[in-house]
Amino acid sequence: MLTSVFSKNLYDMRGGLIWWSVGLIAINFLIILIFPSIEQSSAALTEYMDNLPPAMVAIFGNIQEIATMEGYLGLELFGFFLPALTLGFGIAYGGGVVGSEEDRGTLDLLLSYPISRRSVLTQKFGAIAVFALVVLVTSTFGLLLGIALVDATIDVGNLAGAVLNTGLLTLFFGTLTLALTGVGLKRGAASGIAAGLAAVTFLMNGLAPLAELPDAVRHITPWYYYDASEVLLTGFVPANAAVLVVAIVFLLLIGLLGFQRRDIAV
Amino acid sequence: MTEAIRIEKLTKSYGKERGVIDLDLVVEPGEVFGYLGPNGAGKTTTIRTLLDLIRPTSGRCWIFGLDCQEQPIEVHKRVGYVPGELALYPKLTGEQTVRHFAALRGGVDMAWVRELADRLDFDLKRPAKAYSSGNKRKLGLILALMSRPDLLLLDEASAGLDPLMQQSFYRILAEMQAAGSTIFFSSHNLPEVERVCDRVGIIRDGRLVTVESVSDLKAKSLRRIEIQFERPVPVLEFEGLPGVQDVEVQDSRLTFTVLGSIDSIFKAAAQHTVNNIISHEPSLEEVFLTFYEGGAVDAN
Image (cartoon, rainbow over all chains, first blue to last red; front, side, top):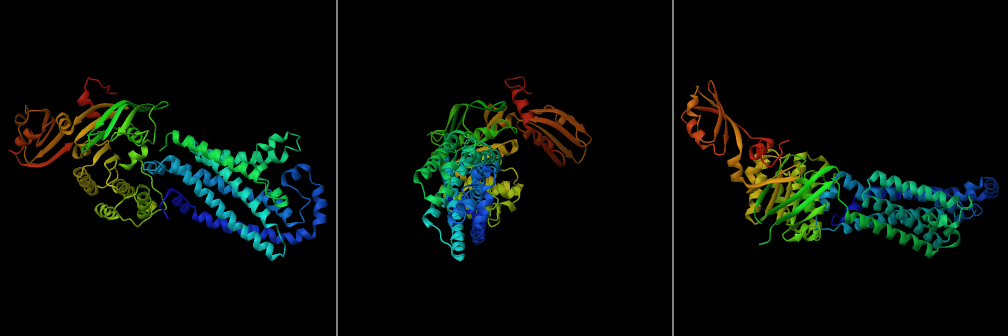
């Protein structure tokens, strides 16, 4: 289990892996259990939501479809709640895998071994990616179980696309945090910047149309390419996911470049 | 044969803080080289540059002919390192820690690891966070020694070991040297360096002030010695002995300063009944003053 930096980091995350998986399965499951009552009162809800300020609607998504499972999940889960949670672990581990090793001083010992900095950072990135994958895949079973239980249906292909995008968005912010510690920021600063950027870009993406800002403003936010709510309704857009993948690779390269050049703190 | 360590014109500055300045140093294969200096003199900076953990501002260094900055992985394969500020993974046990780092290095003989643990009286089974600082140090030594490296870089490696374990540690180092390893031994403790090393480099304020053989260093080192006799002794018997200065007699207690060999004073003392001898090792500052009084080094 401890034969590589990759497996050692996953081993360190094992407690988190279990709790995040169990927690998200439970949350997903509970959210589905509320669906039947939403479905029944959809007419009243739609009317209520029509009266909400347009800014809120712009941010939290398409309300017309709340009576369908896809629309409901897009609004209640994938629109904000789920990515807010998964970004939590993405940013925490992204900041921690290098940042806390450096704070604690173990990075000094680790990098004195015959292993390149590139390999260390890449393996740590791999551990975060596998963590995100496992948590998201297992928690999706909570959704599927709930959907079966309330006798509803969902487009499984679209759901898989939405889950994949959630994973990519999580990894985007996780890799951003990792890259910031890679270039030399402290863990706290890196996590703070990443969390702040996540919030700002979320609002930019949601409010740009309302504020009559050019579309380009949305296009520079990762949330635009994420848009899991839309994926649930209309299907997975490979090009959008590809943008996130390219952005993740770019961030990783920035982190690698910085990490390879800089001094390691003690 | 290639030098174990070659450092040329190495400078490392950290903004306002001092690192090392214009350092030139060669360590021959098979020698135990003491790197002596007070805390903050630049010992750790030198070692961490050799390991490519930090990058030189200017200058270059090689280990066994391999460029430390260009070929760090090849260098690391041949080096065992004990950091001055040793940090370990708190949740791993000693054994897990050893297995993890052994896997990263490859080719570690676990029987040798167990022998090292035995000899250092170290329990591999407990989690690192439960270890005392002495035990952490032992684990750090096991990690550095487990691959029987060609070069050991030890940064204040014996700090925190009790005297008995220090002796075990010195014996292991002697065996490693006999088996052909080179040992670079940083310390701020002069007697320890004299005990363990063949040659000594003295670093101060980031500059290497001298490299001496240990025998030369001993010949030049000034010590204050106190001998308690059974009965009062005549001061004349001790004044004028070679290397002896500042002789004082108070009843049956004799104190003096001696430079180099203490043989003559002991021969003279042996004429009387000796109850006790106290030797005050010189502080590093005193060594610097002895070596460079009015010389090249600014004593501030």
